[in-house]
Image (cartoon, rainbow, N blue to C red; front, side):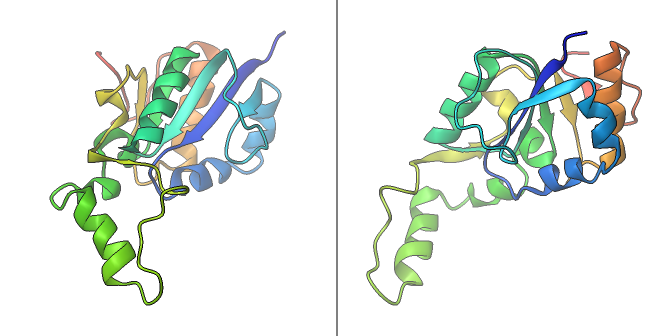
Length: 177
């Protein structure tokens, strides 16, 4: 049996969803018999593959780089899962929306700087005017709510998807269902 290709991606978020994903502990070994992780911040792959069966995305879309990344991921993924409240609603990263990116950058790089106040232009991508959830940019197939979703939620959702069974988790919905 061919293993499914699975990826995880991190946009603007805290990495808590990835930490909760890893909290599946020994259940990860069971999943490893069914899937190959082909892209993730927890592996050393730099380029998103041409085809991935399932991609779990953490974080909101807050920058031009995030938007480019999520569009590429969607174009090369069969089933896209928005994992966590940042990916689903914008959550904490969207708290900057009332202030706008200019005010945030000025506060971070001018008002609080002791030496060389300047906005980095090489390592900080251009911020979007507002932070938005993933589904406002691309179609999302599955939403896993929570901040972060529990390891049990990840396990239940992935095992159901891998078995081709309907998701049976409270507060878990399939987009458009």
